[in-house]
Image (cartoon, rainbow, N blue to C red; front, side, top):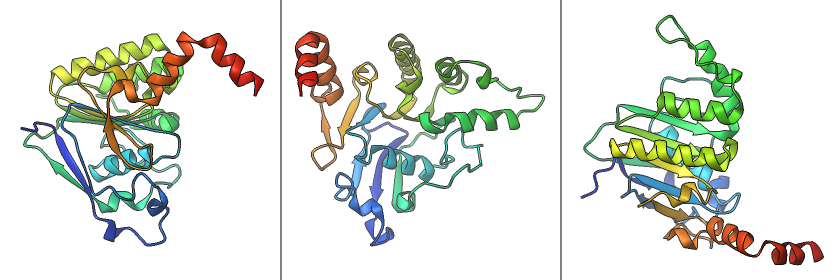
Length: 238
């Protein structure tokens, strides 16, 4: 039995305008539903394949601010989110999350700035701007990720060294052991290796589930590490 906080999403395409660019995203246009059967689900694929667009829509549909943060964050630096969120129906499980966070690499600076505005005597600022990008990412994870939470992450590896990606993986594992759920857009072969994770690719023109070893992140990284000189020679000769 599916025990996840979010069990499934369904897309009602009749609620999306006929001239919307969403209908032009090849991988998405035939998607009517997506199941979440594992506590960690990855969305992978080439740039522009629609994975971040879908993650953003899910986040907004369950109550997060489009630019990220907790559900208490309400601000807009630039209104760029799509209408896909209005067409998504979220099917929840029997458990209600106690915590949550929507983390976007591209708008983290704006969220960190807003965090300083939301402080009070009981909730002092964590001063994320006083740390390096990677340090502030990990500090945020350690401050906000806890048991029984729903966490949506868009390319969290962007600011993290390989070693820090392993630290994030360990934090995710801790939260999963305490019944949290993650939906993550990632290109990181380290994070994608999370044990038992479901991986949906947006490549080949449709959304479908694949194994870790089938991801482009794994295959290209493995090929480069094992055949670096020959691969570089081929690329640089072209």
